[in-house]
Image (cartoon, rainbow, N blue to C red; front, side, top):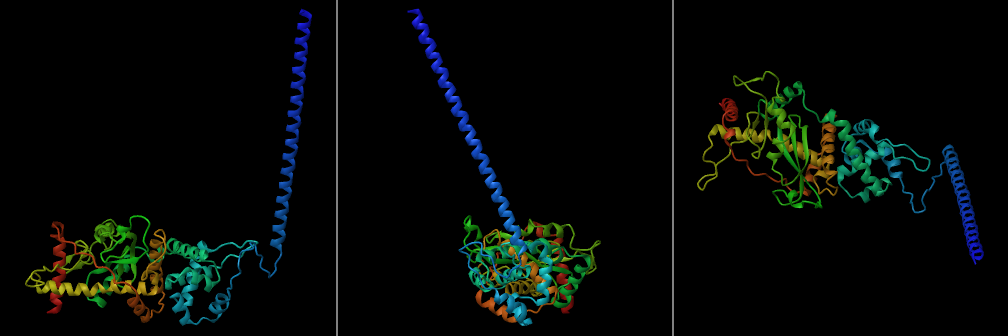
Length: 435
């Protein structure tokens, strides 16, 4: 019996070892086949990649006039209007009407923006020339028409039109701000003060502060914040306008319901003016006293020794202005006349670039940059002496909603003292002139 048990154990052990050996051999064969297949796939991929690179090198070396269609659903759009009509047949008046600038200014702008807008051709698609990209974007800024219409006109896709507008606005702000939207030099401050005196009759002033509301579509978040005092949705911008009618400082991207005084008091312009950065050192003399150059603002701004605004008229039941003296009324009239420089500059801005006068359907991430770009383009066109057509203003006056008026900021204790003394000096100046 013992011998049979030992034999049975030995047979069981031998069977187990044989099965294990067979399983190990099968696993080794499977691993060997998997490795061979992996190497075959890798070699096939390597050959396919070499073949594709060779085909691209061959295609890049061929200079044929035939267009290569890379996708079966791509439609070839006509560019004849741009290449033949605009580039060869447009007259000076056509450039001014369609692009709001002369041909010379247009190509000057293209040269300035080329470092940011130039794209490289590929073997399968030619990049849009910088001139065409700028033309597409300017057409949109000047007319505010739909992307679909511009797409058909220039023979590009709607997404391309949107990308051209976005890219050009960012390029203008990045490359041209230091040239056309920068703090004024001391000589420019003196020139602006002379222009305010000679053209608008207000002395010792270098700029006027005003606001611009740009209509927008309903935003996805906090829509009520963008409702302005008139009741429509807008983005609010603060601008400082020189005596030449050009913008020195622009703060955009604020909801339409924001108080202009809050924007101004938190802006870099406020800090610069409060520190005397808008006046030479030492301050020039006015009416026998040293006084820094002043800014002019509407009633919604706080009175400062360097910011003049109108005297408030006390509205009562018997009379509309019961507390104002004749010198104060004269000051208010002269101030209102001088503030026309900002009104006219903003009107020319909206008339030249009608994307600011009609409802802008771009997103809130694009609108502030677009406003800055339009202000820079306005300064560039004005500096280059490009003509401005009065009919553009008529179009804006008929189409746009009136700009909202903001509530008057009440006088506080800080408005008395130096600020009132400075305003009284201007009253005395105008009184002497009238006599």
